[in-house]
Amino acid sequence: MPKSKLRKKVAEQHAHEEQHHIEEESPLLESPSWLAPVMIANFLIGLFWIVIFYVSETRYPIPGIGAWNMIVGFSFIAVGFSLATKWR
Image 1: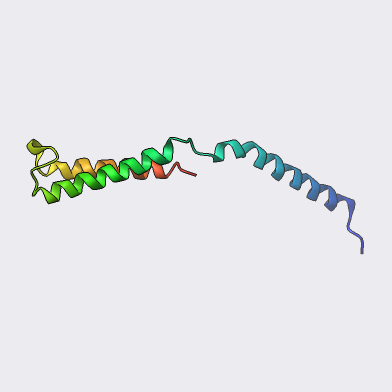
Image 2 (image 1 turned 90 degrees about the horizontal axis):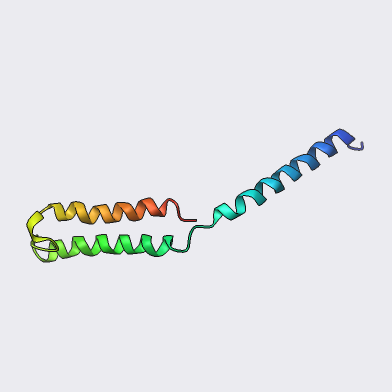
């Protein structure tokens, strides 16, 4: 049994809408070129901050704030994760 013309028109219309939708979003799918290096840098700074804090037996990187150095290190890591959500 041949297909009706109505179905053919609807299928063509849906195909056209999907193609138009993809063309609109394609420029938005790319992340900025600075995003990945800044994300990696934040992960590494946070990691090194915490490692220095433990290796120096809680004296460094900032001697006066004590255990708050952990908060600073994890803050760098949290910024890295927030940037990772925007990376495509």
